[in-house]
Length: 166
Length: 179
View 1 (cartoon, rainbow over the protein chains, first blue to last red):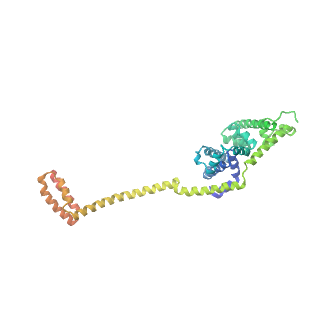
View 2: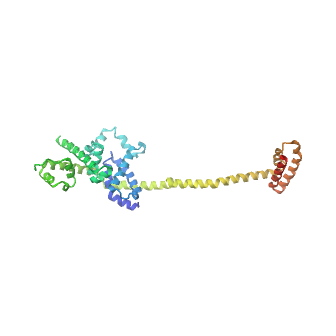
View 3: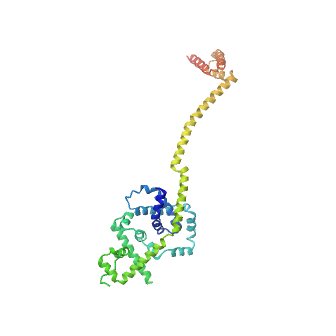
């Protein structure tokens, strides 16, 4: 892909990519490091994207695989900043608290859902995916995607009600 | 409020997105039910708040992009020397060098051997070939006359610088001695 074309592509997609990665990572630093891998994968493989899948689904797959690769790699391969952050976090309750405060109530509630429901809820409401795109990205049927989404919504509703009642 | 039930999760999930997707009667319910309206408003507000929290600053995006181009340039420069293509090319060149250099070095050794033989012959014509010839014959009685002839031939070879002549002689004598 031509660098100029890639810059144009990023102009359109960069924010969506950022949101997609940021809503699934523990920290800002992790998000930035992962985005470097995501950009590189897109830059190297864009020619191979033939349009069989929707662009959003293709980008989602790249992000998901980059996130999973990132958290699987050994500690010495993390960037210096990410390593520093990681080492400081578990022993520092203040930092833990401030990190929790960085999240919205909804993010906290969503983080407590089963994995599949979490993912589908995020795709629908944080990444603005349609149900068709969710089904394609998750490799499940449309009705299964709907079922997971409605279950997730029901749980989130209950949690929000509980919070409002307190 | 309409007499219908409050919204199900399915309807709620749909209503968060474009409201038009709800069936007409459920839209009517939503319009007339403050509880559902309030709940839906809370849900939408939470989503909007989260979206806002997840939104990057423009400066941040620029920094990430700049870092990417910087790293890509470095990776490209590195891959010129350490990439799979570069490494294959280097291996091919190395093999080519070995393929040319090895036969040349072998040839040089042979040349050096010939040169040293010729040097010995020139400096000590009575030594090298005589000792070689003496080892060719086991029979004591055959040794003396042959040695005399060897020395004659050796002198001839040294004088003419024709080692082939000497070897031909040795071969003929050896064959003769065996028969």
